[in-house]
Length: 314
Image (cartoon, rainbow, N blue to C red):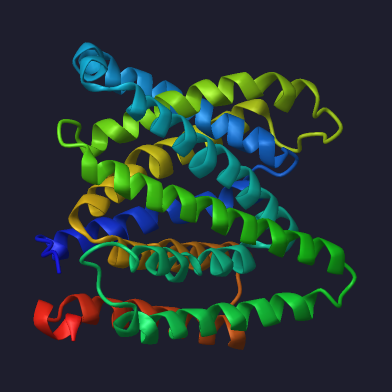
């Protein structure tokens, strides 16, 4: 089994990424009146502008190091892991609420760990099974609550929100696996530079989507000013996309895929805490049980990876 150094630093980076990404779930609540597509375009236009400013001094050097394969990877990672993911996420929050969305996204550790367990020198799947079962049980709790709430007056909206959250889950799983593989094979580009290059491509995509997003979506009257909207978009771009992604890319180089998947839990934990503070309420019984189960899932995964290689392989 491959030995990864600086596991402690990787864990800290994973926690930092989760704390930054958790704010993403509040943006749809703060920018009421704007569509999910408008939120995605605003955030990623700001992300692109930040990336241009930060990458400009080293652009010539980076351009010489990138091959066409790397540009293709950046294109599809930006489309799937940023634009599509955030549109689905924002719609899920709008239709199903912050708590439901954050806990469905909490299933990401289970999915990414399953994919990572297929890699060479990965921790055997049977050793990860307790972690997967705990995480799956946590998601079943919140899914049960979401389906129960669908019996209310806004049942269709709750179900649609749940479907969008599942779509975001699939989208970001694809990104997490692809991004981890890309970072492991790139040796001349730092994780921060890769983040800025991703922002450059994502900003270009957002620019193409700006006209349909704002010219053809005039049926929802914004309840906040454009300046307020721009501030939210810039804040999410800086905290989540620049700082949060930098933490995540660093963690992706320090931890194996079977462990990096579990770090996504911290996004769920922070998002749920922010959402509960925003809604000024305590978690429900099922939400509390789900949090405990998913937390136990991560702790179990960390314990397996801290075993000596001979024990983990047996």
